[in-house]
Length: 175
Image (cartoon, rainbow, N blue to C red; front, side, top):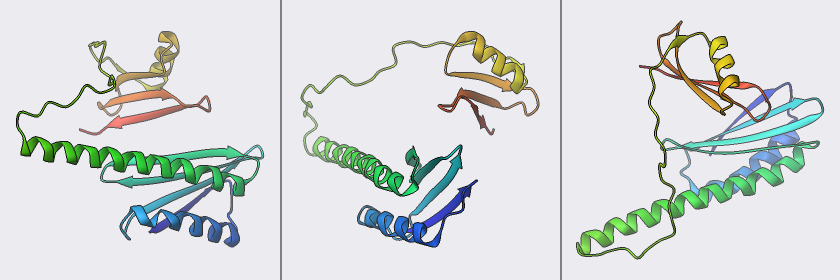
């Protein structure tokens, strides 16, 4: 595995990097050698945040933990990430088994499963060109967690969303 350390307002010691590397290397059993793991270490107001991100075949697996000690964060974030990996692998394996079973028996009807999530409501509206500041105002007015709009400056579709820390995030669709 390739581990990339990124620090924001935090400088990681070599000891911390070694500990993180040893513990992240346990995930080798799930991935190829060229898999990249991003480790973001940041500090704000004596709160240390560790974020682990793995992008594999377009699937993002991420774990973020904040506490007063970076070493404790490692022990909390890794099991979270490992659960996500196992869940994803199980999902992929069950899909491939279903495909194989359907190939063998075209009359196969799968047993009734748990209720799956479905789209229960659909909306459509005209995208209005606006600035990011205007979109923030609209987001606050509608009271949702996100807002879709056409960026006046770039003419691209953007999604503005409210982050857990109270700030905003912006996703821009490049066309």
